[in-house]
Length: 239
Image 1: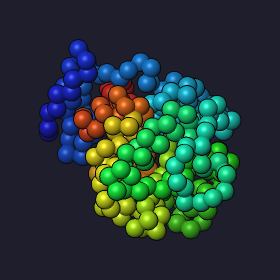
Image 2 (image 1 turned 180 degrees about the vertical axis):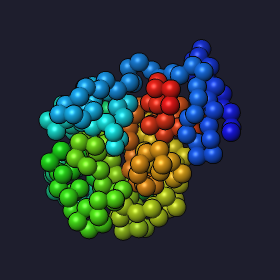
Image 3 (image 1 turned 135 degrees about the horizontal axis):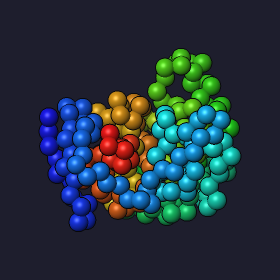
Image 4 (image 1 turned 30 degrees about the vertical axis):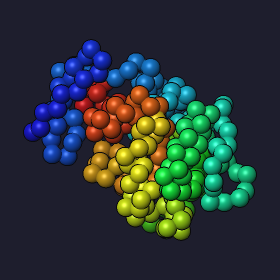
């Protein structure tokens, strides 16, 4: 067992982790109160009641209401892999500004990102999920069930680059753009949501193309302490 000391302001948390990196014990669990999920039961399903929370944790256990649509969706001024003015161009305002700055700074270093897929409605996610199950079976891990997708928050954007023909594939993580994101994304408030080695925690395969906006402070904290968003929320549960 490994011991890690995590410092959050004046609070010190001693976290014991196993080989897989899962939190086994905390003497002082800590998560910002404003980051916590507020969960209510809707039709027997654990549903997030505060979806505007920038740190909301949507996973295979907690969902968004089918009626939830972010109120501040805008189109970021970045290059896209398609021309149509459709929903997947959109992000929430704060995430959009951060994406624009990140793309611009990367371009100054000779790296060109392409935005592929942002916001998805509940209905659009249902369509994609049904197709994925038809093609790969119910155990597929690439497409979330409707309501359980981060894209519905308006805080997630899938990105790619020309060298892999704008595809969303694991090879993106080894491109200069993918490596740059791993090192710099948190400085703009984004995290690589589904990390390599965390599949057993997040429930999804490694997706180096899937960026999730959580704000700079939290993104830097997660990277520094090598925590997935799920592990961060689990600190408040004593998991």
